Length: 230
Image (cartoon, rainbow, N blue to C red; front, side, top):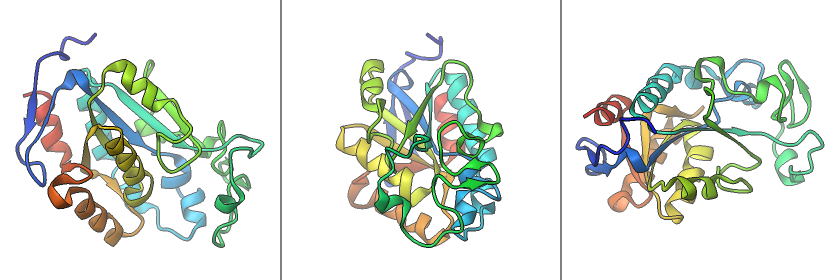
């Protein structure tokens, strides 16, 4: 176990809507879906007509957060939204929705779209997991659905989660709500998450911290990293 863990409670006084207390020894960082298919040109996100530059812009902030967590001995967990090659875990209602240029499972510039093992479904090189970090492949929006994440967190004795990644209003918020229902205190890194739609990110942050942190808290990467090493 890293020597930085077990040093006791920390507090992010500037967290919103009020101070967030956590113990690094019982905290994990979950980085949601920082995949090439979502943040690089030619991927699934772009096929839906989105400008991916907003999502690419958060990579340095996510990298700083990951580095801070690793230095503090806080476990880093990565997720990838992807499906089996035979599409047996892909409901037609998900595949057939909307009118994208490419659908899940179709051949794209980075391999089959959102298919496990394909280059596009993998995490961007700048944020790639290091040896020993858990990578969760999830078929849904939330990281708890049809995965072993919940059991893994229980085994680690996790009580608090820090979240980052994309997109704020979909996979990030869904995971945060799932975690909230399971009793975890959740903090979202404001500048290490984003949406293709700026208004959606703004609204999600407000929803999360409304009514006395009904879903959780938010704070900046700098505030979180400072607390890691306080």
